[in-house]
Image (tube, rainbow, N blue to C red; front, side, top):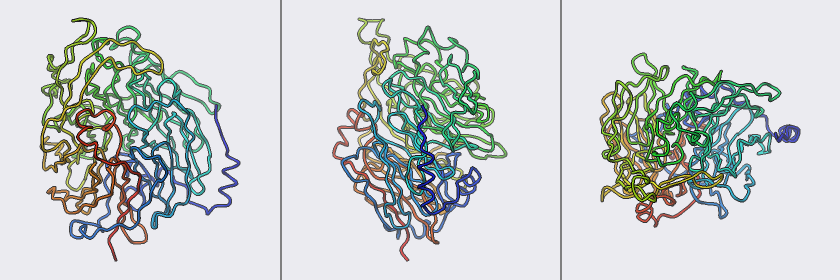
Length: 577
């Protein structure tokens, strides 16, 4: 049932200073100017590149704090949010489904919104939120109980609120929405509970549902008219073509990291998570569209193409990682650093594989990717064993690398059109993993596997790597003791910014990898930095606050980093006058 408070919002808006409405054109043009940050990824194509260069390799050593803001209270845990900046305001989400509006020059709090969460929410991997979207006079974000909330940018008053799905069935939502041609696109979380992944498109001004596209084969897509009446829009895939029996009905493939949108192709690109359950022996077949990138025509809600990185996934290698589009020799390509340890270069229009190579140094589940077929060359003995082949209680355990937390997880990479390199926050770790019997029960964990995360190297786990998508070579790397879990920003100032769980925001020369600046924020950084220009000055910001999946699921690695402290701060930097 739709909850609307347009009258209240109109009255509040009449009392507030008028703000120019954010449009689709502004979202695209502001990404090219760098003066505002209007989208997750800085641009909807997800490049996380800023054309600003006031801060550069020659002066970044002088970068100093301009202000800091605490989220306050006892609600800390993981802070994975990317701030947005518009009209002198910063909009930043925080753990437990909160949003703050701050003066972007001073850090003064303008308003706060706290979503009332029910008992019994089931987020798998901490109470995080990764950011909001801006459209018209709204700031829009999703919540841990699977709702989508739109607030007035000036006042924080509720304008509309829509239910995405039933949190008691395991659904939640943590990703930043993305704007595409007046639509707001969202995914769902909950793959560990047997949900059915999908992408939803709504009218960004009103929240009205426009289309829904499931990401599990066999489920029907729908379109909705202005009155909310739905009509069928075709089944995703072909029922039971790559799934046995009825397992597709609770098939997972959650779209929990959200997506990107390329106005040059007219396509939205969403990564999909693991098939459910984890025990791959129960679901013979490729299990489409799990562990894939799906390219969806935003006008029709139809899947134009898909590419599957890990068919019949047996290692929880969610394929949710962002698909970042870029120009190369007259072609529009996309890059994806998959959780499974391979980097894929794909034609953004056709879905044709162009290149594939490892971006981590130890991969055990496959030896390579066949560039002709696009399929992985599996190493059969490194798939976790079938419990029914033994005592029926536990299959043969295998050591697998990467671990299920991935060569890369939720932390977004960046691409520089200047250097033509991708900057990938990678992790080197493995796991002991085995399969167990499992049956679906609504609202219960649906794994059918056990695991323990293991370290591989004594000296490092994380590594920021500059990757050449043409050659597949690591151009440079900066190793890190703890696993990297925050995203990356690159700028025309020949800089790359990223954070570490040890609490540092760092900057390196984008061409050489030489670290040229760092600042201790007081808690682990598991969020992506941003930059913008205001009153003639370039600002850099990052959210600090240790948490996320590593301390919850990290096994031996979690023990290794248990000295790290939680937090909840926004840090903002600029050059002194």
